[in-house]
Image (cartoon, rainbow, N blue to C red; front, side):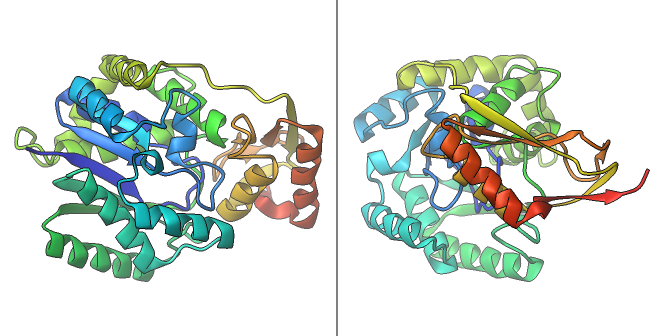
Length: 336
């Protein structure tokens, strides 16, 4: 039987495609038991975001039940203890703010084998402030993945994607969850970059199926999303995991305004993620940063660039103090 999975190497704030991909792929009829991680060094992991929408701390028995019922799940890998050695290492990495290549490959593939995946798609975002900063590094990682996958008999497909800027608008568990809901519900204000990324990745996964010709996956994925079947499936998966809920909203917000009229020339992913963490993410689920202006957007002087969301005034002022140190998290170049 074909059991599919995906993994994103990470380093891109807001790149929360999994909760959109799993319902598309399972609505099509493929099995996708997705175990996701909590944040290691980022403002949110998929498990943190998903937890604002439904329970994710399921044990193996509960996970199996959900997958048998709905063909898929989106649960926290640590609660299932599929890869206990990795769980220990992640604890060390989180404390030391580490993320090494060999560990990354071993960590990811060990989890895929443990849920008996047969076909896995890996997304490697490449960009100057992403985790993988050059195509040279991406190809090294790609090679590592391929060699190990071949040895363990895993069918692997790898995509190198644009990692130059955050994805979606929210950075932080609940803010990312609102983005996901907007995409799944086909809302006009849904972030199109998140939608497009999810469709490309879901399309590639659908092409693992013998029923789908190469190049046709994305269109099928889009049909499933637009028909409302993906959102319907998402609701069923959430209910099976213990119930769909509404993500929380932060008590305090503060918008950072553009100092001048011009064009958004640069966005520092790492510093933006740091800003969201100082605001309280992922520990405070509603905390984080909302990005209003993607790269190359024209902005007026005084227009909001980002809004910081925090649960306490203290954390809000913490985050603002970072901006005093590095005001150029979002760089606006003057011009008409």
